[in-house]
Image 1: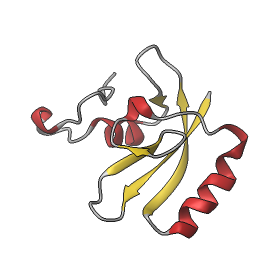
Image 2 (image 1 turned 180 degrees about the vertical axis):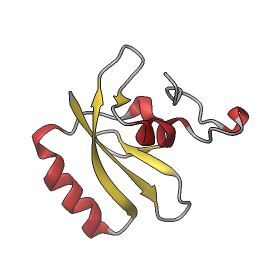
Image 3 (image 1 turned 60 degrees about the horizontal axis):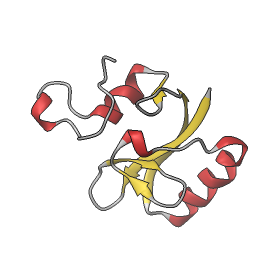
Image 4 (image 1 turned 60 degrees about the vertical axis):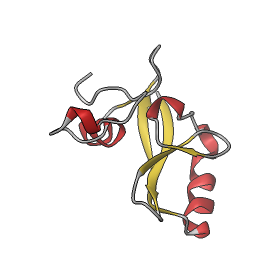
Length: 95
């Protein structure tokens, strides 16, 4: 199991994923934050650029990380009503 850092961009509200050096809209770009996750989460919250920052559990797959909860899979894939609005390069919420 791996741990990912996610949140919402303050300016746009978009779901974002920590890549190890910056934030990405694509879940497949997310990296395992490992044991440094709690410290990284604290720094993220203090910087006030990302809202609702959270560490989540995920499983590594050949297509990128797959969040363990359906909630986070939906956040990673985009809207479930209109597939045409889904984010490119994301793992489907139902995968």
